[in-house]
Length: 193
Ligand code: GLN
Image (cartoon, rainbow, N blue to C red; front, side, top):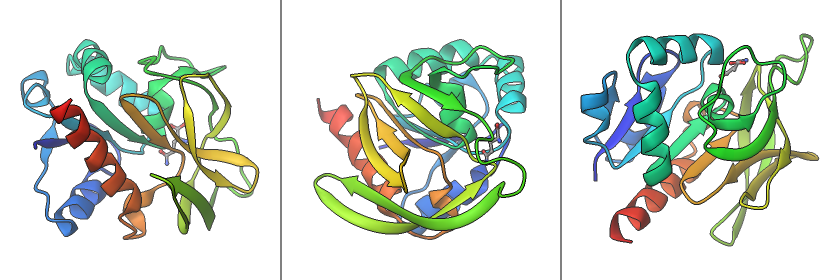
């Protein structure tokens, strides 16, 4: 199983460290050729506008959209934003891979970064983990194809559809492997389908 981490902008190296801690050596993806060898991909947090511009410059936009329709992508924070189908006020098109409406920088300036408890429900197992929120977006609405996987207070912070897994916080910064493990299971299920 070949896992890629999109490495054009943002905190991709933390995801790679996390996967390494779990015994998985991943590929840093900067070209369509490397992407095409991957079975699953992580799109890290960063700055969604910059991420979009750089992806387009590297010729990765179309290949990523096609990848996400057939294979599994895990998007965290900015990675979630660029895969959402609706981001009101966002100056760029999105990859439109998951039916969620997202508000960027939704916690405002005063509390733009914080750590708080998040409730996850993964494969029938409930857990409470630390969520690191950095200028995080909020998922304001989900379509019927989307399953909710996590909440912070009343807000949806993790969700998935058939191919796409997203969360609004940074699981790669806490050492808690649950979401990454869930992603790896999702990838391996799709390989064997
Ligand atoms: N606020 C950033 C954006 O809108 C996302 C922040 C993050 O990825 N930590 O793209």
